[in-house]
Amino acid sequence: MDVRFKTRLVAVSFAVILLAGCGKPDVYAMSRDQAYKRLNAAHIEPSGDGPFFRLATTVSGNGVNEVTWDASGSMAHHKCTMTLAKEDADKTKVAVDCDGGSAGSGAAAGMEHAMIRNRVIEMVDATLKGRPFNPALASGATAARWPGDGVDGSMIGAMAGAIKMEGDIKRDIREMERKDKEYRAEVAAETPDDAQGMSTEPQ
Image (cartoon, rainbow, N blue to C red; front, side, top):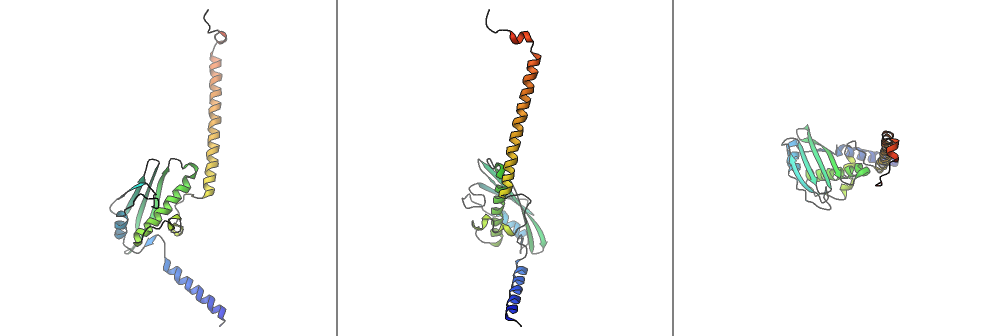
């Protein structure tokens, strides 16, 4: 057998083994009860390197299959809910849904949403695997293998949002100018000609 062919065969076999062992990134080898207890016991300190940066975070759960991390501050509020579903007796699938934002996010709201969700996914992964939260992985390395949530967090999406926002503002200004012009015309039509020419100076 050709040596190069053997090498390729070994490489392909090794890759197949690796992929088979990886499994789904959002499925963890533990019961739903174990996953719930770990996520509900998470202690998230306000930190520049934490999942919610310096926002104070509270943790709550429904006692069965949902855990919520609620982070808030004077200018921002983010709430992420982890929903746990049984894959079988010793496997649990985790879904992460986030909402909220900051006061100045504007057209970049999608990017901010994706950033926070990526960081929360890293926190979930670290918590369930019993390892420290890794700020380097929080930028998206962990979340990249997870299913998306349908929110466009790309730069292109943010630019499109900014263009739409600018168009909406211009449309609103034109509408205000039109209404102002109509109002002035109505006032002029209702004012008698002699009243319009009447002097306000004392006689």
